[in-house]
Image (tube, rainbow, N blue to C red):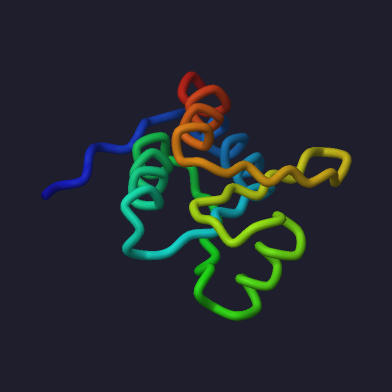
Length: 104
């Protein structure tokens, strides 16, 4: 299976996307089919989000204590004021990513 092509942007637009992506982290399991869907969306949208393996004890602890439950995929979103939102469910995460990055 081949990967779809990444979205192409100008260097400036990609730099803006990279800066916004630096405020995101995806808590996930490598083989989880819902996580794979989210990672594929990140690839297509060309959004370099940090991945956190939720099977690692430190990441699992953060996910449960701050996110509220041990469920993946989970997107950790930090806004400009430092407020953190934990977004669960692959469809909601993909919708968020499409809204934030598809037309940039």
